[in-house]
Image (cartoon, rainbow, N blue to C red):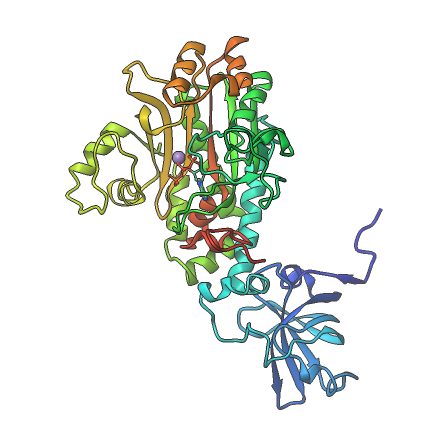
Length: 472
Ligand code: ATP
Ligand code: MN
């Protein structure tokens, strides 16, 4: 069978810009970015279809039948189909251009009303136009990088024989034990059924019990890991934390591998390999978009990725050592550092950006600041937790070895005020064929921030959900 038998073919802007396209008759479809009329009796259209940052230049001669009536009225945002012949271009920064034989307009965009005029808008302003911002260079590039990160995450785990399992979005258990969960209910807030003592009668609710949107797929992933070995879940997670920062969303995506027979060191090794693999793959697959971010957003984009992929091991530092380093730093932190308190973003940033200028893995955290499922160390005061910190973002991965001893787990649950009976199925995994096992969560948006240098997490997810904001 022969390919390329169709002479007239739809092609993306990305492909038509390649020299190999010269000589082909093509169909291009997209949105006009600009129109320039030349004195010689023709017009240039810059067309973009979201396949790459640069546009394709269309040359439309005055003898086209719709030239005066339509082509000369085109402006930013209009949608068109262009048929034409690909030619070599003498213009700067472009190998090819398209000589139009036909231009069909699908939709006009009144230049008095269309918000995305030539002037550059701030990312803050563009958040108000989340329905139009993917038509800009920056948000097109973010969408492509986000796609590439997602695909590479799957590639990595599939290559290493992990099974992709789908964990539920609606759950009755609070994995992080932090209580920052969104409630899922069909109870009418105007007619709340109550018990004799005044408490809500959840037997009248849809699930016969309180239910929430998940904060993590980990507990369910452990079920599959302790049956099938190596698994990962990759989906949306929800946290009702009222923190208005540039690194927190109420709805974000997380990839969570969970591995049987992995101890903390194996877990760290896997986290490191995943990040390195992503670095290599993105340098390879997204060079043009990364160049855009490097030129327009953050000139450290390539430096950071190149540091990441270098073969040297990430620094591995215990929480206790980190506290000592922070105390000795002489920095004037907003939040004081003391053993037993959670590290703040400013502390994480100091360690990864200033102290090590490289990714750092912190491990062995105080048991008082970590959830019940993390494995206790013999010192009776720390657990086998690990966080990976990277420059520009701070914490990008959080994980641990899981407590696999029944009695220790039950004690930890009791200490944290949890009822082991509510988690009977989780506890059962320690009663039947328990194994050492570990896992972690990598925030997709934080990874995209790290790669692109985009400062605000609201700009690396198409439709950010944050306190007080759920438009679109
Ligand atoms: P942080 O300390 O930054 O609030 P966390 O310790 O609560 O994060 P984990 O529960 O360890 O986060 O979640 C694992 C990973 O998920 C984090 O390392 C981060 O990459 C990502 N993540 C956590 N919370 C959020 C959020 N609200 N928005 C976006 N990503 C998040
Ligand atoms: Mn964490």
